Length: 237
Image (cartoon, rainbow, N blue to C red; front, side, top):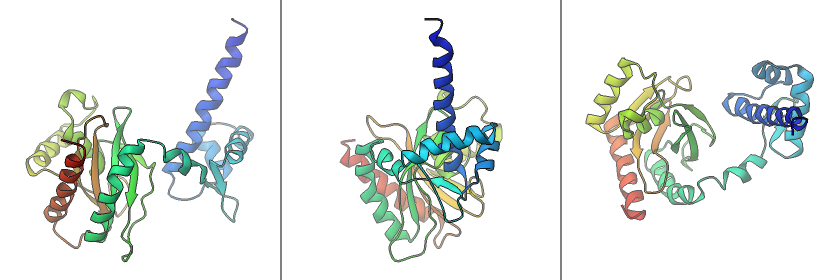
């Protein structure tokens, strides 16, 4: 058994690095070079190259015309199976909100206790809107969607490093029923978000994002709360 341990450890490290490559590309705002991926992982270029070739073979990573790296279409097939029932339930409501308000509407869920990950999003068909792809992740202590998830959690479930300033902000947000953000996750983007709790589903939030808001924040939040109410009724709450 002892002889297998090094091989097992090496296999685990390779898998971990491959997953980390996908996370790096998901967090990037533009396609990356192999050298940039290698630097983000802290590995030699040759190691990054082998990882990327394997991910390319599986359709999880692709290249643009300049040879730079970005997430591949194969991830969409995997993502479609994640919380499939929640995606199918939420998408029509997100699309309605996006059309009504003329801005991108998204659903984020809690991941690993301290991060928010975008599960699904919808953009208006007739209006130019911000693109915000599923898989985008950030701490729940930043950004409207993350802070709305925090808003819906009991304080004992919050990350240990929540600063006092944020605690005060969450208390204020709880009184009005929604969270806001500006420049906290993506530069220039604003968001309004409300918590979403559904039976059998992880803590979540729905949000609208845009570079500027054509309506008052409270009005946007009211529309989001209407969507939450409909989702909860559809779930038997």
